[in-house]
Length: 597
Ligand code: ATP
Ligand code: MG
Image (cartoon, rainbow, N blue to C red; front, side):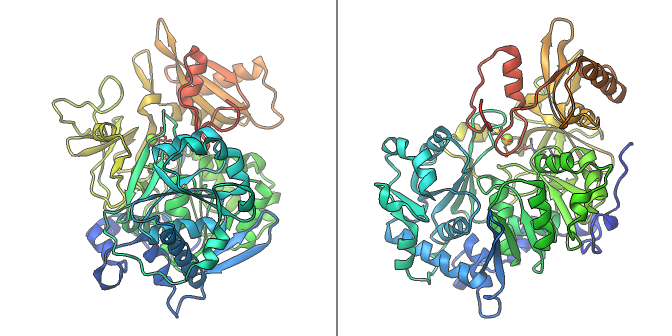
C-alpha cells in the first residue's frame, strides 16, 4: 500500500488516553454513557441545554470561559459559563413571554456569533425545537425551509432579514415572530429587537421536564444528492454527542477547541456548539471567513488544542501551503498547543492526511457520519491507528456492516431481507444497526422516505463502502454517484483522489458519461492549482497519470477543466449537477449550491 498506516502514538501530540480499540469498545453501552450525564434535577428528564450550560454554571465553574469569540477585526471577547447560563435563561424567558413553547420551531439565520449560542441553547432550555439555517442561503432556500419546518419564530439580523426574508414573510403564515440581533428592528415592521426582549427578561429559568425523546433539533441535509431532507433529532442525542466527542475528537475539559463548520449544518451544531460545551471546555468562535493567514493565526494565538475541520478547508490550506515547503505561513505561528486534528464531510484524500503531518506536525483523523446519524459513527480515532484514505473504524456502541449490493448499487433487499457481505474488500452499501441515541427519528413530513431508509433491522446510509480484513472502512462513493463502466463499478472518490495527487490538480469531481460500448465512461472535471494553465498537453499528461495510477478500467477517459466546480454550501462537490450539465438534463434542486448556478 502506498500510504502507510500512521501509528496512534504518533498521531497526537500527547500520549493517547484511549490506547486500545478493542478495550475501548468492549463493555461500552449507551446506558453507561447516559449515566455519565447529569440529567435534569429531581429526575425531570434529559435536556441538551442543561448538559451543555447549566451544569457548568455552578459556583465552582461559572467563571470558566465557555466561548472565546474572534471578531472579523480580530478583537477577542469571552463569555463564561455563568454568563452563558444567564443569557440562555433570558432567551428562554423571552420565548415563553411570546407564547412560544414546547415543540414550537425556532429558526436561526445567523453567522457565527455569540447570540447564535444564546438562541440555540435558550431554545432548547425552553423545550422548543431549534432549526439552524445557513446564513449564506438565498431567499428561496430560506423560504423553502421556513415553510417545510413550520417556523414559528426566527432569529436573524436586520441585514439578513431585509435581503432574505422580508419579501416572503407574507407567504409564511406560521412565522409569528422575528427577533433581530443588533440594531435595526425599529425600521423593520413585524420584527422585535432581541436586545430589548432580553433585557426585559429574568436571568434565571427552570428547565421544564424534558423527555429524552422530545424533539430538539431539526436539521436539513446538505442537498448533495437531491432535495434537502429535514432530519428530526431528540434530546437524547446529547448522550451520543458527549461520548463520540470523547472517542473521535479526544475532547477534554482543559481543551481549547475550534470547529470550523458553519452552525447552519449538523457538524456546526453537534460538534461546534453542543458536544464541546457538554465537555465544559473553551470553544473558539471565529466570526470571520476562510483565509489561510487568519486560520493559522487563530490556531496559534488562541492556543487551539483540538481542531475539527473539513476536506475543502484542508485543501484550501494545502493550496496555500504546499507540502514541499518552505511552510513559511504555518511556521510563523506557534502551533505547539495543537494536539489533535479531525475532518468530516467528504472523503479526505490520503494526501491531505499526510500533508497535516508534514506541515502542521499532526496527521488528520478522518471520520464519517451524516445529518441522519446525528453524531460521528466511524472514525480514525484516538484508540486506533490512522489508515490514510480510510474513514476509520466504528465507534464504541456503533454496529456497522457492508451489505451485498443490488444492480442499482444500493443494498439488495429481497423479501425485506438483506445480506451482510462477509468477505473483506467487498463493496456494498454501508449500513448501521439502529439504536444509538442521536439516530434521527424521522424526516419531517416524509414518513415514506424515512421508512425506505430501513431494511431487515438496518439503517441504509446510501453510501457505498468496503471493510478491510482488519476492520477499517473505506468510502467508495454515494450509491447515486457510482459509475458502471464496462462491467466495473467505479467509485468517484478513488479517481478523484488519484487525480489530486498530481501537483497541477486542486480538486476534482468525477461522473459517469453514457457510452454506447462501455455503458458509461469515467469523466473527470478538474480545477487546477493557481498559476497552472489548462492546456491540451496537461490534459494528456493527467490522463496518462491517472491511467498509470488506476489502470485503464478505472481511469478517466475524458478530462475537462473547470475552475468553479459546483459545490454545496457545506463544501461538497455536486456530482449530480456536473452530470446533469454534461447530459443536458434538468439541474434539480439547487437550493444548497454555492455561488451562481
Ligand atoms: P443529501 O443527503 O441531502 O444528499 P448530504 O448527504 O451531503 O446531502 P450530509 O448529511 O451533510 O448531507 O452529509 C453526509 C454525507 O457526506 C455522507 O453520507 C457521505 O456521503 C459524506 N461524508 C461525510 N463524511 C465523509 C467522510 N469522512 N468520507 C466520505 N464521505 C463522507
Ligand atoms: Mg445524505
